[in-house]
Image (cartoon, rainbow, N blue to C red; front, side):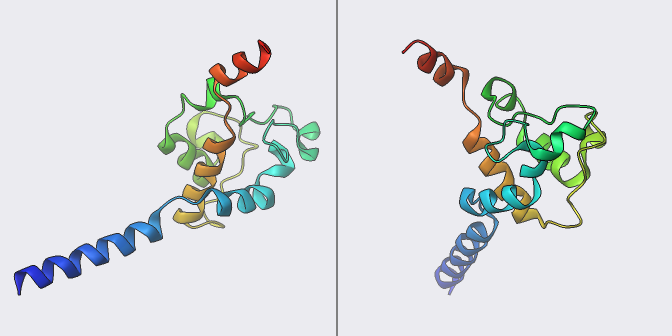
Length: 126
């Protein structure tokens, strides 16, 4: 009976983990809907709305900067807005529009487009 209970708990944990995992593909769709107007289609901070902002939106492709930021920081800035982490108040809080999984999916996508300085240097040297 104990063994059966452990197996059931393991299956529940695996299923719950997949529900809370990060999905870059879903994050990309959310990024297009919620972020690209300011951050641009490719994440360089050059979206159509960026021209009207007093501060340039973050360049999510800059791995030198982005890879130093923790997931918690990115989750906080997305869910609570820029002013909550000492950044621009023009970065809106999306926590009421997006659930926790969607925010983690956005973080996964942002991580996927951040180009490390090693990749940038290797490309520049070719």
